[in-house]
View 1 (cartoon, rainbow, N blue to C red):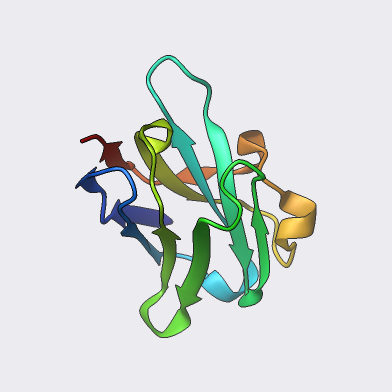
View 2 (view 1 turned 60 degrees about the vertical axis):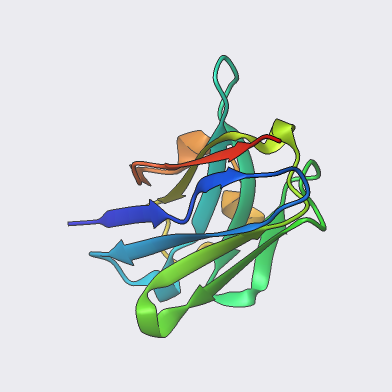
Length: 129
C-alpha cells in the first residue's frame, strides 16, 4: 500500500535550518508528484512545495521561495525539503503527500491539498529562541 513517512523535524533557533525527509513506498515515485504542506495550530493547511520526476520540475509557494529547496533521491525513494533561514512563522507540522494523477507534473497538480490522496503522519518543526 502507499506509504509516506516524514522525519527530520525538530526545535531550531530563528535563522536555523533543517532537512525534512519523506520516505515513500507502494508506488512509483518517478510518475507521481510529491507535495509538501504545513499546518500551524489554528491555521489552514498551506502548500509549500512540489516536485515531480526530476529536480527540475518543482514548484514553490511564494511565502517560502528562496528559503526552501525540494529535491529527491530516486535510489532511496525519498523526497527532501531543505528549509533554511527559519522564522517562528515557519513553525508547523510538515506533511508530504502524493496523488493518483499518473504522469502529471507540479505545474498541473499544484499545491491544492484536495488533489492529494495519500498523506504521511507529519513531522513537527518548531522555531524558537
